[in-house]
Image 1 (cartoon, rainbow, N blue to C red):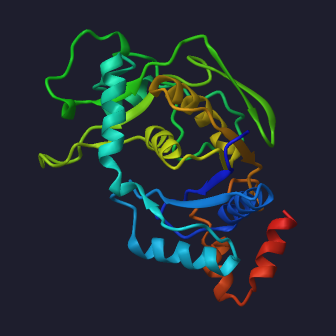
Image 2 (cartoon, rainbow, N blue to C red):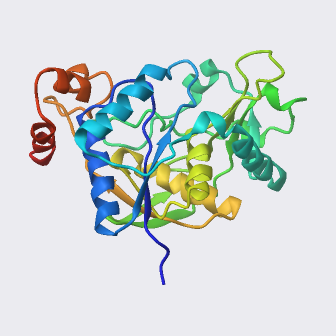
Length: 285
């Protein structure tokens, strides 16, 4: 007997929710309802420079206004650093990760662009193909704070998964994506600052912690799913299902992002639209 369905919403409080978020969250809400399941809310507030309390309040209000219900309590990633650190230490002990001392300038000079269509806009948490320069270095930093850390992908291995919406997917490690960030070095000299996990690591650890059975998110994260499948395997975590939605785009065909203030749910609310009218816009995309 399969486990009870558990889905999640995972917004980042770095801006106002827009129509694209609403479309994905509505799909997640409907998927949970169709399966008589549970929908959880995760506040992905790991960006200390861009996360704002007012955006958390706004996302809660906008979700309620749209009628997208979730089961409390809300999980905030900023409270979960010890769990992420434990997962990182497990990867470090197994040799699955290695230190990367490349500067931003080094990365800009050495990295090739991902193999996407020229018109595609990658997700902000995606990253270019890393050349593996530090993978082959023999020197190790004296402290963990001296470097970022990358996951060592199995070059040439094709990661297959069945997307519940878009069908069979396949991405090859080392060509579709390279060694990816797992842990970022501290930004300050404060001993209490131990750095931060990458999106990939935090997402995998929290999906397992919340016992998520299906992740609903945008198609711009398909490649991230391949990375996360590798992380689940390396950490001994259960596999889960994925349902990637087609992206909403503006009049120029560009993926909606938080810079599209005119399409923010808050802006549409203030213009006098009703929840039904906003949901109708999504349905007519």
